[in-house]
Image (cartoon, rainbow, N blue to C red; front, side):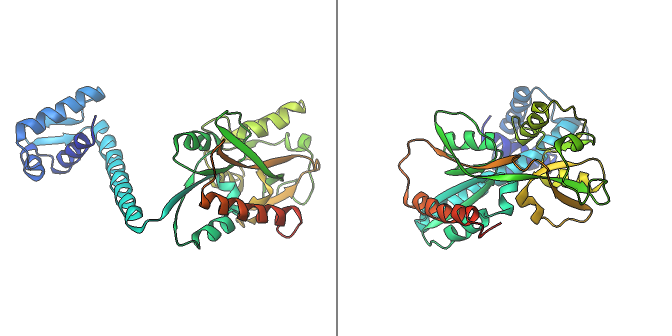
Length: 300
């Protein structure tokens, strides 16, 4: 399957007429029809219903059309951005991150790097597992996550350990207390992210399991904000890193745990053995200051 096949399909799906679509694409109608037929065979589904009044998208065809438009838009944007970076002679530096680290000092790192005239900065929301894959593939240069993973091609540095807090619905019996893990286990738990695994969800499950505590998982969410919305809806409680308490959301209270030693790390992931570029050296210098600020109490 080639990009031109996707473009042919999108024009045909928009026009719902092979003759008009072929004219717009500046090709003959029979080759366009063959290309669409070949695409359907490759997918193993029928994309169009063909009737006397013309073409109509099937349910599968409509789904494929909507997602193909997104793919082509992303391709066009990527091509345009690539040309823009080449013209500006700026160095591309990509950061992968899990959302919960963005409530702390990561924005200060981004702000510092954005002040450099020769850097084109991109941010990509990825789980820690996805960050490892993206680092190995060269899609990002540095990642910030929560999960310790063992990969020979990637090194992980623990920036600091962050206390976990319980996010409770307003009016919850544990609001205003410092509950133990045993007390939390008595209430339905909301986990995030649901996929891909392993993730912070598995870390939290392990914390209860190691203490011999049985829990009831009421819901799994892919995003932290969704999990917090479920908490506000009184679907259950969830555990979040301390920095998340900066999220002032109606219907939610945050409480510290009785077990002060229960923490979750903020990890910085980089490609192992790679000579740091000037931009990476700058990022490392900024990180060193930010971590020291955190450890010395100058930044909560």
